[in-house]
Image (cartoon, rainbow over all chains, first blue to last red; front, top):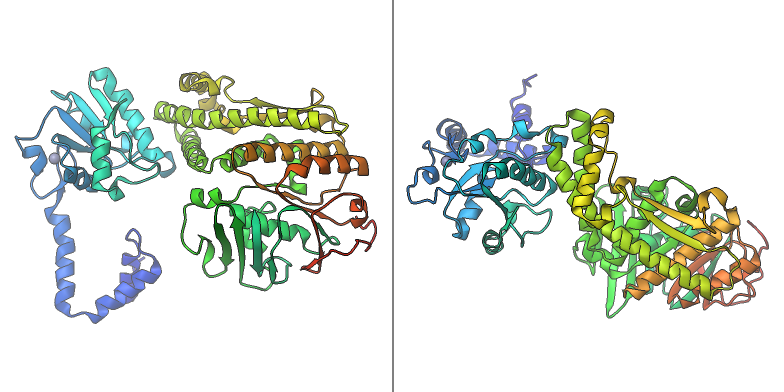
Length: 196
Length: 365
Ligand SMILES: [Zn+2]
């Protein structure tokens, strides 16, 4: 049911964004009303461009303009290692540590029965198809119960295939998110990863 | 030690600013005068929880929109804790006026309490005894909150998984085994410590009561021995769990058996024996925490209820080793021959110093 009131409709759309409640959505909508038309056009364009120009890399699921992404296409990267993360935005923090030169695989989620996410709802099949020549899979899922269960699930799946499986080891606070973990801590966790 | 307690908008208490000293305090007043609320406020500010209700908003005075409880505790330095609730902003808590994690907050002042609701621990369903264990491990080491949370979240996910379809159960059982083992080790160690203190207290006391023993029965039975054993125990019930669509093994099924003279206490004891056993257990909990360097404030609501004067006197002796204790009573007469360090009167939510000999209403129980 689309509302006929354009302002109410904008508030409705904005409040569907994560982290935005009805109060903030109303404030943003009124802001949009006040700014010059050119700014609104720029925002609209940016929104559409994101949807039209960015795709998931067909190999690793990272977000990219070109497929495959720059990391998958880079011949200098170590092809014997894959680092598994939950979301595309988990890649930049790991890259910034400078400790890791392998490739990535984005699961696009983590196991969570409460949110209806089981093994079929995360991108596992693509990972299994990429195991040729891979010696080690580093699991960098979030250190919360969903990330931990996902790591254990992958470990059960990968080990019988002769791949070494390791997990970011320490330094990350329990219940913390990879997104908010600083580079030094993350770098230390990467170099100190433990075999599963 | 509690050095100062002030509260506003809390239950039926008038605005209070109280500065009790160390030792054993007696708070006397008629039923409904606000004695329990005073203990509740103290318990709440130290632990962020009420012993009367899981819904802290119930603590606000009728027709008011907010309450605030402020406590100052004396250890190496003075630390101020505050808990509040308002209709508009919900709950909040501060440590020395600033934000703090729950672990840091709980680290400040351990508290152990006995109130009428604790009869459940002795006579009710196993859940109340599991809560006693978890309160114990968190009081002993507040960092255990993380262990508990990890276990509870994992169990919640597994529960949901079994209701829906059960795919990926192996991974969740792997994680549950790790989390459950951590929790069971803590519970098991705590029960061992309780047992030692119960024996010591019984041997030193003149109380005429059959020996009380505590027995930890983990699920699965050999859970605390190792993650592999626990994992194997989960595997054993796997088929039954899928059939009944619920988790059938793990710490949520642990039992703490409390025995009186070898029989399960909840089956055999009289009301008086239960009360005496509950207070001995309280004394043992106090001693376990104190020995670990976490000397708690002790709260005993309606201390003399269900107890004959002899039992009361012997139990009161047991608590002589408490560095700070607050007991309430509606029967001042039964306390006349017992020694206390300070006496207070509570009347219509107002707390007064009461150093005069007690001679008010007799036997209003
Ligand atoms: Zn890629």
